[in-house]
Length: 74
Image (cartoon, helix red, strand yellow):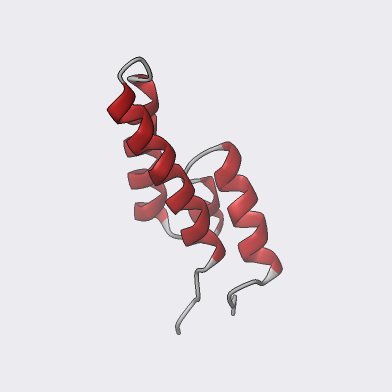
């Protein structure tokens, strides 16, 4: 069971830093991984417009924090 601050969550947060959603995929959260990856990639694709870039950066940070704070409830 992974708890907040465990090594698995730290690895997931680091993976999300490089590729959005990869850490969620490592944690086994497939739908969250696909959603974060697609949304943040689309925001970064339109980097020339300030609003999507700002939204993409905020969501990327949210993605990293979400992976780091994940608690597996079973």
